[in-house]
Image 1 (cartoon, one colour):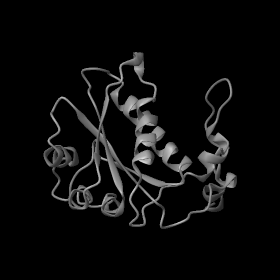
Image 2 (cartoon, helix red, strand yellow):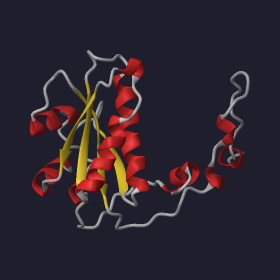
Image 3 (tube, helix red, strand yellow):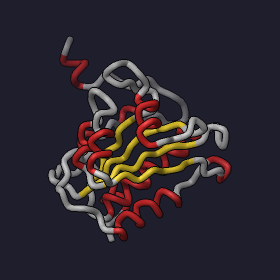
Length: 188
C-alpha cells in the first residue's frame, strides 16, 4: 500500500484511456470511497449516476465545447450531483466525494479526470447542466456538479514535481501578499 503522500503525487488527470472495462470490484471500491466522503453536518446530499454505455459516454463527451471530449474514451463516467435543499454546502460536499473517487481510482492504478458541469455552458451557450439533466433524467431538485471519467490509463504522466509547489501562496499567522514570482520579475 502506498503512502498518502505518494498517492497524491502520482494522481494526475488522465484524459486517454485503454478500451479495457473496469471490474465490478473496482467500481464498487470507487463508489464506496465516494459514499464514505465527509459532508456538512453529515447531510450526505450527494447522489451519483454511473454510465458505462459507450453511446451515452459519447453523448456526455459532447456536453461542453472544450473539456469533456475525454469522456467518450473512459470506461466509467460518474455524474456527481447533490441536493441544495439538503445542504447549503452541497458544492463542497459533492466536490469532496468526487476527489475521494479520484484518489481511490489512483490507488487502484486507474486514471481519472474531472469535467466541470456546474456553471459551465454548452457550445450553443445553453447550460451544460441542463444537457446532462435531460440525457440522464435527473430531477431539478439535484444540481449536477461534475462528471468524473475513470478508466485504465493509456497515458502515463510523470508524478507531480515538488519544484512546482507554490510555497509563496502560504501565509503564517496573517495574510501576506505573495511576492512576485520569477516570471513577473523577469519582465522588468
